[in-house]
Length: 68
Length: 417
Image 1: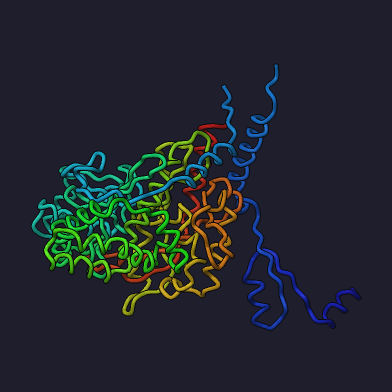
Image 2: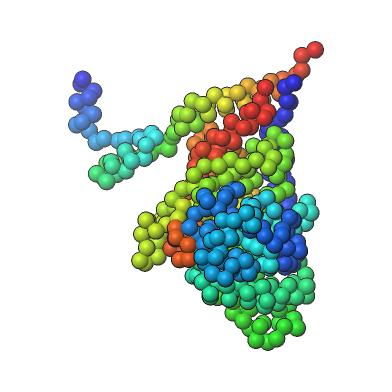
């Protein structure tokens, strides 16, 4: 709780990760903000993640030496 | 049996072919004589396959104009009936080794550029650019459009054909590389490319046997149309990408295109297959008097430039373009920077001065698009959604993610055990 009080007494420094509109809102209020562009892998689409994982596993198998 | 393929090696081969391709202008011919499969009742169009019933307004307008031009109809009402009949066949330019800007409509008697990839021997074709305003590619079909098309067939085409016979082949790879140094990205800004082409053509054109009045008018026509080079940058990009059109296991894109209804892509390792999704609305700057409600969705084969690392991918080379498509100069830089995240390599020829001559982002990788969710950046003209009106602005657009998701499904089905 004390650290929260300190936070609001000091100048706020913000790192924003992901949605750029959060950073834009702060910039409009003259709050210093560093924006990090990030999005979840495959936009969070589970089916696409599953397909990409299958390709990765297949490629790993293709690279490994053939079993005798 | 499990298929054993090294995807990285397949993609390396694809980009190696793209990098080594050297497109040159070989000449000009009549479509029915040189375009594979071309015939009198066939209409080639931009984008993936589409039926008359599903065509957008500007595509329909262009088809109607082409039918009048070819003598199948005397007016728009007749042309609509003919287009809807079984007499006429439609096919994508891409299935006939070519490309067409906007509606991209081409018919048997139109003159076309012949562009050859000197390294791999493949050829690509494209009609000659008509200029701006009331033009067929934006769906206009009035008398002035048909009159201009007739002049292009009877004067412009023959004069340029003779000019090229005198001049010999022109290296388009070098011209595009120079145009990028001079502020073009060769999709929506072709002022430098057109100027460079003019310098290449003019001396030989003056040596041609054409009447002086025709020579003058041809030079004025090229000089008066900053987009004249577009119909060469497009088949140049097509000729480059054709060299990677079938490479087993490769996930590199070889085509992105739109017909005004659907957006379509093709992938090097999925031979001749189309993956489509709905064409998106373009966001940008509109000409006075038009609103977003007037705009047709994304249309044209010109996204072949982006597929080749030019256009929206090279916007950092063309900061002035934001005056045409919207945004600030810094945005142009950011669009290019972002495209490095979804491409396999950097061009060894097409360099961007503002990025310390870094090569343009080259070889769009389907897997990276799906992993990052970053969609290719395209800049483009905007056609009015009704036939016969023409261009209403220019702006920026992305493909629908569905194309890429469907292609990924198909890839896994084709290759992964």
